[in-house]
Structures are given as structure tokens and as C-alpha cells.
Length: 218
Image (tube, rainbow, N blue to C red):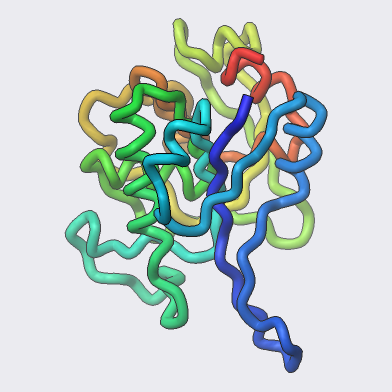
């Protein structure tokens, strides 16, 4: 299997020769290497038609830059993290989601990935929420899983503990999507529609190999 995976922009403000970079978390590399899956890194929409032909699915990863709230009809708040240096991540995510959905290939969104999926399909976000961003030690909390969802089948339970690294979350859920997991305080933690799944936590950081194996039917 070959999966397209979004590479993320990062600017290093230290005095060095390599200030602007694209990166992929080592967690993904390790997990998919174990699963014998080739990750095809995407940082632009160049030759996207060929990418769609080559790849069997799409993984939309987390990122440091928030989605510009103009895409869901709002002005940016002070807490919203936008970049003056690089503004292409939103359009790239939306284009990839559109293309892979049209091709009827599975899409998995993680953290900012679930947010990009929701916004692309017409939903909105809370631009800042308290108590879901890990500072220092990793924050873990329990989520409630809906009956009949992929997550229930994956874990064979309706409650699991997940990590939390986000300061934004889904507000209005996009049409046709089903909320399939929520935290105890009501924050949306997972949505699904057809062959699209988005989760707000980071299963790769939890080394949750079985989650990826089962979702991509490996």
C-alpha cells in the first residue's frame, strides 16, 4: 500500500542556514514502516492527478499553523496561530481532501486533519478551547465512542483514553458527517462519513499501530 501524507511547514527562527522546512513526524514513519506501507510525502499539488493514481489513501496530519477562519466565515482571534511566512497549507489540505474523496479513496485526518476535513465540507471550528492543550506532561482524557462506529469496532469498547494536543476543535459539524466520539466536556473527538474518518487526538504518538492497521485494512 502507498499512502499520501501531508508534510507540514515549520520555520526555525534560530540563526542557522535552514530556517524553513517541511517535516513528517517520526511516529508516522515508524508505524507505517512496521505495517509495510510506503508513505508518499505531499507538500504541493504538483502533478496531483498522478499522486491520486499512485496512492491508495490519504493521511492528513496535524500541523502548527491553524486553519484560517476566513474559510468558515470568521475573523481570526488573538489565540489563532496563523503564519505570515506560509499560507498554502489550507488550500493544499482542501485540494487533497477533495481529490481523494472524488477518487473514492480512504481519508484519515488527525488533529488539524479532522479540522481541515470538517471545514472543507462546510463545518466550523472553535478557535480556542481551554484544557485540551498539553503543557509539560502529556494530557490524557477519556472519550465516549458511539455504537456502530469504526472506533467501536476497532477498540471493541465505548470508552478509551486518548492524548490531547489541540487548542481548537470542531464547532459546527459538516453536513453528512456523524460525530462518533466526544470528550467528557462535550468536545468533538471524532467524525466519520463514507470512507472518511477524522480524530482529534494523535494515535501515532500513542503508538497505536492497530488503529492504522484496521482503518486502512492492512
